Length: 461
Image (cartoon, rainbow, N blue to C red; front, side, top):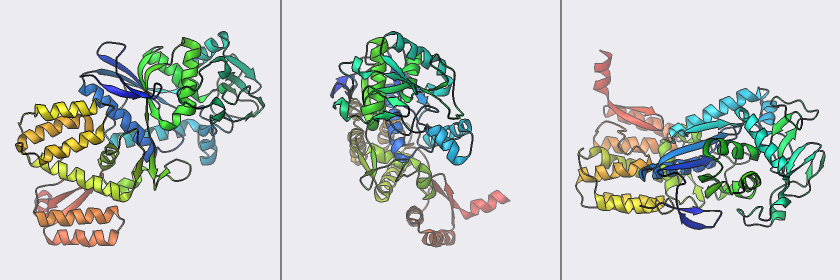
């Protein structure tokens, strides 16, 4: 069954035709580890994970490469301002290397809570300085660069179709007019290597052009080529990468290799909070806040599946609560059903068609609910739902608590809702109610378990 994906470069849905039979080369832009990843960032990484799982569902092997930007990402996309890592180090009065290490660990911890699989290759910009210098040297030899007092720049006028991915006039791209010590030839020209100058930096290296550090865009081109080759199958990132970062990656690849780097460019759209973009600067929301309110982190994963990745999704606590309730309902059906049923081939084929058409996860969820309402045997429903879960990764067979009376379960759900809404006093009163009914509630990572009190006494004995 053919997998179709929307290619942002061609602006149309195209069939995936892997370069290597049976295996897909996938590159995704990773985090800049100067701070915690917010829910908007995590939506993009959930898209990448869904894509990986759909590829596996189709029987493909996946070589997934993801970078860690731990140097070179300046505050301004116009190559001016301070390096984000250096700025974070100065503000926190810590070592930039340690900050990178700490926030990388936070990123993978959050990813694990959302069932996001670790990429095949995780490559850090600071570990690949030599590869980036070699890449820049080839661009210099081919005449795509010029040097100013503050660094080496890519000359975008050398490409007739620069910025084609973004479909906007080059003059409209977000780039600065001035650089710190000179004038760029064009607004869209970008830094390949920045010189340290007199500024004291924690992260800098020797190069043929002087001591300094790489620009942001060059790391992805150099590391993608090292691990995936000069041309690979799919490149994924957020919609904000199209006008600058991904346009510049393509420009570098065109200059060095004469191609657009990847056959398919896939982009995920923003998560919004009250219809405004969630960002690290300004309004932000972290996964830890969801956990503090008692939400299962996979409720957020479910929520992201309700909107297509090429549609912006508005986050609200009400929508997250609805997602949590929906996930709980599905799990109850799965857990209560007998084991050993056969997957229903008709539903499986329909599911396969949906996920294979530009990752139609809202359609796949709708099919899930249709299956739940069907007259199929419970064991068949369970087997089919767990087959779907190979893509959803919602742990649909997770047992949240022991089998308890419905009245007890309803009170536990009311307590969970109170916690999610920050009503701690009400939640505690409901907890005492549960104790009076013979059950202790044990809060876990984003979920809870109900334990009969007599079991606790027996354990202590």
